[in-house]
Image 1 (cartoon, helix red, strand yellow):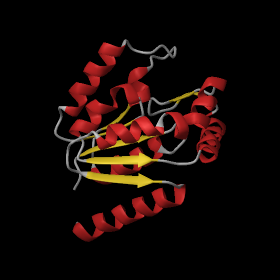
Image 2 (cartoon, one colour):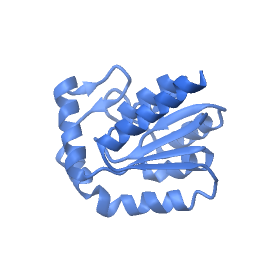
Image 3 (cartoon, rainbow, N blue to C red):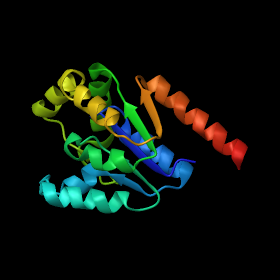
Length: 173
């Protein structure tokens, strides 16, 4: 069983949903990086503090961390035994963000994740595959650590992946 899982991907790709499901399935402590990075007034942590918190998190023997944050991604990738990259199209991600807004009506969710939509955030999502994804792929390639890499390119693939893991868990318990 995988004990140190990183879930990365564009905003609206389904990182939080998948992380919640996998953490429950594997009994892993879960960290949503948005809840760590931002305070209740949507102010970010200083970079050094954010890095230090992540280093402490990955020093633990078991964990699941979800969030993109390419500037500190190497910390998580170096310690992970499993990397799940949600590489979904921009339209799917924007739809995901809008559905989340409708469901939660904005603000902070019960799991600490924030629902904040700005034009800058929508632009980030729209440009993610062209501008951020190449950097993410490079960071994954530079990881230098053996382990499982799962790239999911649709919601259907993510659903099937989760179903497969649930079936495996039933057969091994």
